[in-house]
Image (cartoon, rainbow, N blue to C red; front, side):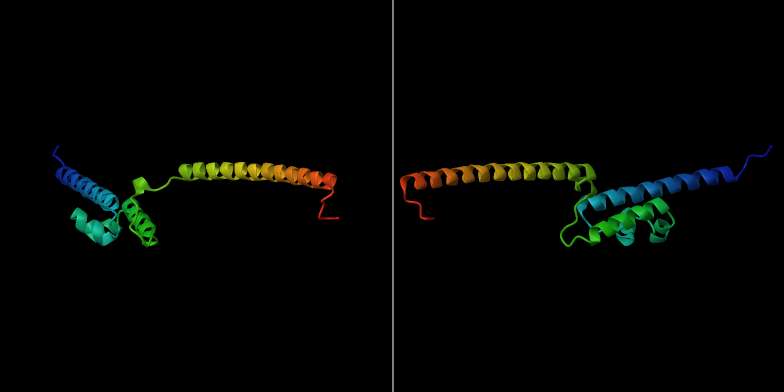
Amino acid sequence: MRPDPVTPLAIAAAQRHELTRAKAIQALRELDRAGVPVTFATVATAGGISRSWLYTQPDIRDQIQRLRNSTSRAPRAPVPVGQRSTDASLRARLTAALQRNQALADENARLRRQLACALGDQRTTRTRSGNDPGR
């Protein structure tokens, strides 16, 4: 039986592919961490890989497009993904704000009741003493 001559080539191609993927992923992370706008060109340059190869990798292409879209909307310096608010933290902040709002509404109602009682007492005192300006 003869050895298959394609196997060493296939192994080398697979290794080269994985090395290129690692370079692309590392470049994506570094660009995002640095706050640099992520584009196919910047990832290709930072990773030392070709733009055309990036377009052929669906997961990497999707990640580049997602990061590009998220940073292009922000007029100020982009925030790295690791520092962006999560849905859970935003929900927690919203819950805290709603609780604070309810506490303030309750305090306002209590203070209004106290003011109404104080004004009623003041009017009663004036009425009894005969100096009610409302008469």
